[in-house]
Image 1 (cartoon, rainbow, N blue to C red):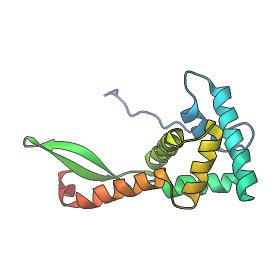
Image 2: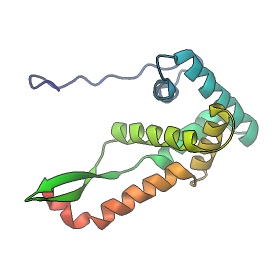
Image 3: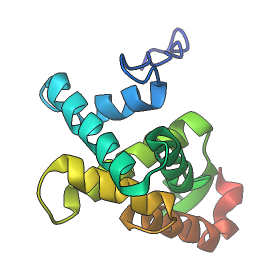
Image 4: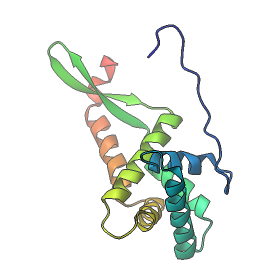
Length: 155
């Protein structure tokens, strides 16, 4: 990280079909080894699957899922006087959204089943209904921050 200046905030470009920045953020996180077209195919397949299963607007379901998984606080390890404390920190909306996307994709990769598109669609539908692995992860993080609230003055 540069000491001279603050890094500029880069705004993600929208995706070509839905013109949505959240979709493009998801595609960028799905893609591995530069295979962005495969990531687009996976996400668009998941969106079609969501549309077919829920009979709702898939972008609404996607936004709802990311909103339900987004954490408000997280804990950071801080070493003070020879012992390490888990200090709770509030996080901004961009960082929270990035964490939510990471958790959703990690949870969908760990799901059993065939095809990443199906696994991702199931995880997004579950997260929109406020259950699933990613939502559990957010609740764990909030519980940990609540348990370590006594160390908040170490910020």
